[in-house]
Image (cartoon, rainbow, N blue to C red; front, top):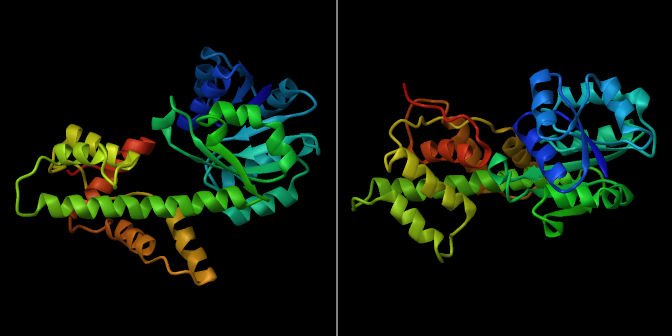
Amino acid sequence: MQLGVIGLGRMGQIIVDRVLAGGHEVIAFDVDHENVQEAAANGAVPAESLDNFCDRLGDDKYMWLMVPAGEAVDMTLAELEDTLDGNDIIIDGGNSHFESSVQRATATDAAYLDCGTSGGPASADAGFSLMIGGPEWAYESLSPVFDAIATGPAGHARLGPNGAGHYVKMVHNGIEYALMQSYGEGFELLAHGRYELDLETVARTWSNGAVIRSWLLDLCEEAFREEGSDLETVADHIAGGSTGTWTVEEALTQEVPVPLIYQALAERFGSRGTDGRFARKLANRLRYGFGRHPVRRTD
C-alpha cells in the first residue's frame, strides 16, 4: 500500500518509519527540505512540492497530515483541494478540535478521517494508540497502514463518524492531565512528608504490581532517576493546555462534572506564576517523558 505523509516533524518521521517498516511505500513532503531528506534517507520517496507529492500518489491518494492543529491544517487542505475526489482519503493525525474535523470533512471532496494519536515520540518502537472517526470504508481501506502505525490491530479502532476520533482524543488528554496531577500531588507529599525517601525507588516499587502502576508512573521513575528526587533544576511551569480546555468546555456544555480534570487544568495555568509547586515540576518533566516536549528549567 502507498501512503503520502505531509508534515515530517518528530511525529511525522515516526509515522513514516513505522509505515515503511510495515512493508508499505511512503511519499514524503514537508516545507522543510531537510526533513524531506531525512525521510528519504530512511526509505521514503521524497516530494519536492505538494504538486509533485500528489503526482507521485497517482489516482487514489491516501494522505496522512501530521501538521500543527488549526491554520496549518486548513492551509494544507486548501492547497490540496483541486487534486482531491471521492476516492481519496485524508487522515488528520494531529490534535485538531473535533468540531473543526467535522467541518473539514464536510468541506472536502475526499473521505476524511480524524485520528487521535497517542503515545508520543516515546512510542516510536512499540507503536501508537489510534482513535479514528470517519467513513467506515475509508477506515477499512487503510487498516493495513493503521496496523503498522499502531501497536497492532488492537491499537486502533473506528469509534464513530467524523469528529469521534478527535473527540475521544480530547477527553483522553483531559484524563492525562488529571493523572499527571494525581501523581504529582502524591509525590509532592512524599517529598515533603515525614520520611526521607528515594522517590525513584518508590516509583519503581509501585510500578511492579501496585494498583496505581502505569506508563506515566514508569516515566515518574525515569524522571527521578535522571533529575534527582528534588527535581531541583526542573521549573514549575507546565506548557500546553488547549485540549484540556476543550475537555472542560465540552463537560460544561454536556453538564458533566469533571472536577479532577478542571483542577488539573487550573494547576497547569497556575504554573505560569512563581510559587514553585513540586507537583507541577513533576508534570513538567513527565511531558518530556511521553512527548519529548522541552523541559522548562529554573534559571
